[in-house]
Length: 84
Image 1 (cartoon, rainbow, N blue to C red):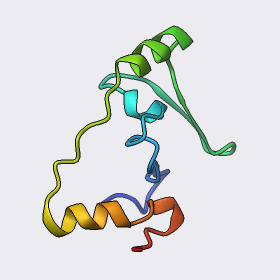
Image 2 (cartoon, one colour; image 1 turned 90 degrees about the vertical axis):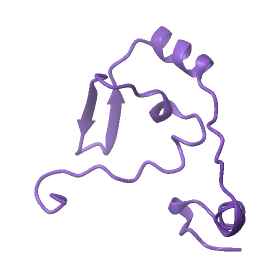
Image 3 (cartoon, one colour; image 1 turned 60 degrees about the vertical axis):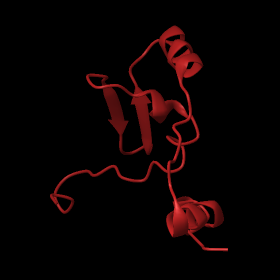
Protein backbone atom coordinates (compact mmCIF):
# COMPACT_ATOMS: atom_id res chain seq x y z
CA UNK A 1 0.00 0.00 0.00
CA UNK A 2 2.96 2.33 0.46
CA UNK A 3 1.75 3.36 3.90
CA UNK A 4 5.00 2.22 5.50
CA UNK A 5 7.18 4.83 3.78
CA UNK A 6 6.81 8.56 4.22
CA UNK A 7 3.88 10.52 5.56
CA UNK A 8 0.39 9.06 5.29
CA UNK A 9 -2.85 10.99 5.90
CA UNK A 10 -5.79 8.71 6.48
CA UNK A 11 -8.16 9.72 9.27
CA UNK A 12 -10.65 12.28 7.98
CA UNK A 13 -13.89 10.77 9.27
CA UNK A 14 -16.62 11.99 9.74
CA UNK A 15 -15.81 15.50 8.53
CA UNK A 16 -16.29 14.79 4.81
CA UNK A 17 -19.68 13.15 5.28
CA UNK A 18 -20.85 15.93 7.58
CA UNK A 19 -20.04 18.80 5.21
CA UNK A 20 -16.77 19.94 6.74
CA UNK A 21 -14.08 21.59 4.61
CA UNK A 22 -12.70 18.25 3.39
CA UNK A 23 -16.06 17.59 1.70
CA UNK A 24 -15.45 20.44 -0.75
CA UNK A 25 -11.96 19.41 -1.91
CA UNK A 26 -11.86 19.05 -5.69
CA UNK A 27 -9.40 17.47 -8.12
CA UNK A 28 -6.47 19.81 -8.60
CA UNK A 29 -6.84 21.61 -5.25
CA UNK A 30 -3.59 22.19 -3.36
CA UNK A 31 -3.47 20.94 0.22
CA UNK A 32 -0.63 21.99 2.53
CA UNK A 33 0.38 19.35 5.08
CA UNK A 34 2.06 20.53 8.29
CA UNK A 35 3.11 17.37 10.08
CA UNK A 36 4.63 19.06 13.13
CA UNK A 37 1.38 20.98 13.80
CA UNK A 38 -0.81 18.05 12.69
CA UNK A 39 -2.73 20.31 10.29
CA UNK A 40 -4.05 20.17 6.74
CA UNK A 41 -4.69 23.44 4.92
CA UNK A 42 -6.83 23.67 1.78
CA UNK A 43 -5.28 26.40 -0.35
CA UNK A 44 -8.48 28.34 -1.18
CA UNK A 45 -9.65 31.84 -0.35
CA UNK A 46 -12.34 32.28 2.30
CA UNK A 47 -14.78 33.28 -0.46
CA UNK A 48 -14.05 30.09 -2.44
CA UNK A 49 -14.58 27.96 0.66
CA UNK A 50 -17.86 29.72 1.50
CA UNK A 51 -19.09 29.33 -2.09
CA UNK A 52 -18.30 25.62 -2.18
CA UNK A 53 -19.84 24.99 1.24
CA UNK A 54 -23.04 26.77 0.17
CA UNK A 55 -23.28 24.51 -2.91
CA UNK A 56 -22.47 21.30 -1.01
CA UNK A 57 -25.25 18.76 -0.52
CA UNK A 58 -25.02 15.74 1.71
CA UNK A 59 -24.92 12.64 -0.50
CA UNK A 60 -27.63 10.06 -0.04
CA UNK A 61 -26.34 6.84 1.43
CA UNK A 62 -28.44 4.51 -0.71
CA UNK A 63 -27.87 1.62 1.67
CA UNK A 64 -30.32 -1.22 2.19
CA UNK A 65 -30.76 -4.11 4.56
CA UNK A 66 -28.15 -4.87 7.19
CA UNK A 67 -25.71 -2.22 5.90
CA UNK A 68 -28.38 0.45 6.31
CA UNK A 69 -29.18 -0.72 9.83
CA UNK A 70 -25.48 -0.89 10.72
CA UNK A 71 -24.82 2.64 9.40
CA UNK A 72 -27.65 3.98 11.56
CA UNK A 73 -26.43 2.29 14.73
CA UNK A 74 -22.63 2.53 14.59
CA UNK A 75 -20.59 5.43 15.96
CA UNK A 76 -18.01 7.21 13.81
CA UNK A 77 -14.43 5.93 13.44
CA UNK A 78 -13.02 8.61 15.72
CA UNK A 79 -15.26 7.27 18.50
CA UNK A 80 -14.26 3.62 17.96
CA UNK A 81 -16.92 2.57 15.41
CA UNK A 82 -18.93 0.99 18.24
CA UNK A 83 -22.15 -0.78 17.23
CA UNK A 84 -25.09 0.17 19.49
